[in-house]
Structures are given as C-alpha cells and as structure tokens.
Length: 95
Image (cartoon, helix red, strand yellow):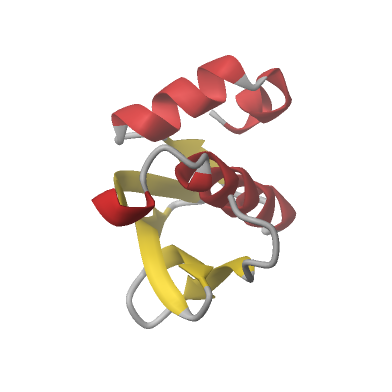
C-alpha cells in the first residue's frame, strides 16, 4: 500500500458483498449471504492490478469484525476466508 492512498472497506448490502476501495476504485470484494445466524462467504476477489498488497486480508478482517458485531457465525466457503480464519486465532470463534 502506498502512502497517501485512501483505502477503506465498505459494505454493499444491495450487492451482498463487502468491498475494498482504493482511491474511490473498487479493488476487490467478498460476496456473502446470511441464513439461520450464519454468514457464508463463497467468493473473494481482488483485481490483479491491486494484488499482492494485503488488501484481501484487510477486507476479510473487517468483514469478520462486522459479522462478529452482528452476532453471526461464519461459514468460510471461500478458500481465502477459510485460510484467514485458520491463521488468525482471534477469528476462530466465528467458525
């Protein structure tokens, strides 16, 4: 990530996804769906132009915090989310 970049994670509820935005450009997203108190993350994507910068990890970390705050559990159907939960013990209680 470059100094001076505006990077934020936002929830796009209408599209059913969390997005990571870099300087007003959607650089990636994580789809989700909710059912029976469980949020399923089936797919995570970061545009190759923005790859290798840790953006997916930041996005998933913030998405999981929102999920926790909403009292939901997580079903990591996406490999990236599954690995993130395994590597971050503070997220293990969600799965």
